Image (tube, rainbow, N blue to C red; front, side, top):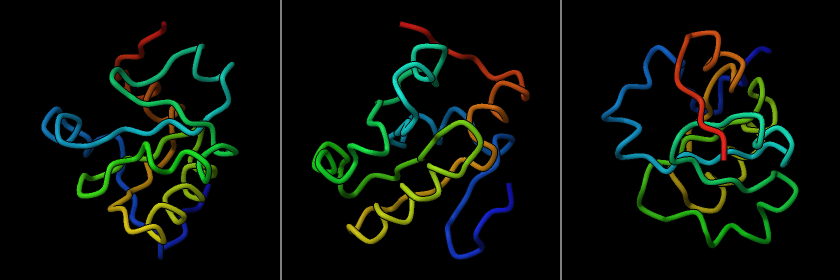
Length: 107
């Protein structure tokens, strides 16, 4: 998926432990996708619920938005930016995360 150049993005290779420690990781996938595996410590708010639940996303903390391949998280990133959050999209989403061999948590 081609990234919109107006939406800040980070590639998996650039997501290190320090970034994960400082950021609020927001997974906007559907519940079945979340249950199949997500980034440890992430918060799950499906994209369709984000407007109603935006208060759960902190102000003043970098937010990394994640979905399956980057499309929905790109929409979430754009919305959160319009709401005053410092949001960035995880380019390639969970597919890229897992392809890169990064750990996945299941509840």
